[in-house]
Image (cartoon, rainbow, N blue to C red; front, side, top):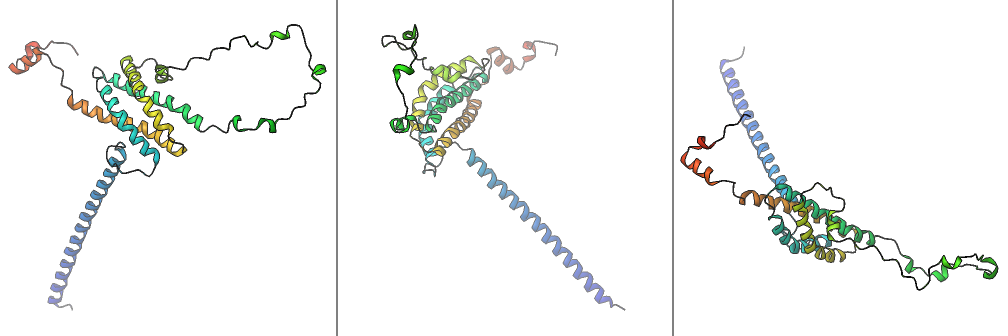
Length: 265
């Protein structure tokens, strides 16, 4: 038969063990929550760092030349883009059209440069005299003349056909874009493009490495979109709310009901 004192001691031991387990479980949950909170903080910082436009934070050289060149480009073109973008305050569609046309123009501007840089070896590098051997034979018997053959080949006096004119800046910006975009945004995008295109081309043409060119092109567009977001944030906080003297008077006197037009909705 179990002694009463032993039962009391065993019960007390179980209580201590139960409290210890409860305490340990609570501490483990708290530690897990803290770890999750810290992890979320790390992930959030990583996301913010990833979204931070190039050239805005760390000025130390990047491991890729294309990004370093892009940073130099952005320092020169972003102020111009900012000033033009933030003048478009009548309608958000103006700003949407502006950024869409500007990025479209940059794509059309850089595409032929990339294509030329990746083109295979041209015929200028081939020794035609060594590669081509032709037996012309007796030209007096092999060539068949006919009446009017002199007119087939152009004479030296004939003027060469004029080459098609090079697309102007407006064509580069609007090529491939729908016609229903806001015209004010489009027009200002063309004006901005005229100001920044030479800087972009000069910096881009310095890059001979395919990876650098791809990084430059892709992250140029990405950064313009990220700067667009920053400009939108600035506009949302800086733009005054629309008002009228009558509205101000009505709200000041708290008699807005007299000025509110009744309508069925």
